[in-house]
Length: 186
Image (cartoon, rainbow, N blue to C red; front, side, top):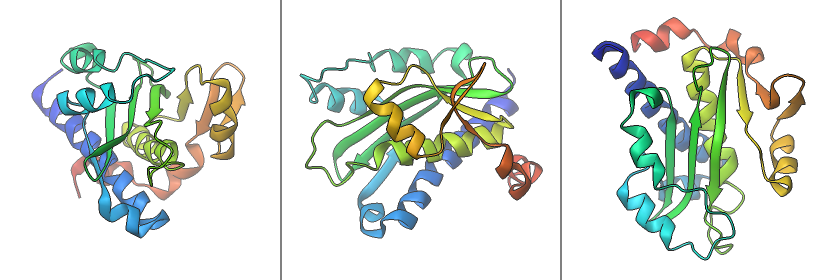
């Protein structure tokens, strides 16, 4: 992968994270003021460790290693922060597909007193959908969702699609976005 393509992907990822902030402002302005969206980094991993004992250990520390590999150059990582508290994490990757991006890991802070409760999955999905559109993909697919999460995804537009999985179809939104404008940075 050349430097120009790598720079384009970095720009797409930042645009996707910025989309999360815009989606937050539309849904809940007061939450949007206090929300920060960043890459998953050492600080996020350390903050995640304070969530334990959490019944679901997705091995987030692996993300730091994955991000340094060319094989994961197209992957999107999102760390949601509410003030200085980690609210959620997301890792999605096309895994070489030209049609879909797989949401491999998505987790919210189990502290139910956080103002972000009920917002982490929709906001992360907003960023993943936007990123997938920038990449020219058709589907956002949730890989192996927890049974209790499946209903929440379905309430947010995901449907079981034969041969694809639990998926969100991006094709109706294609006409609303001119991909060339986004690729050229206009």
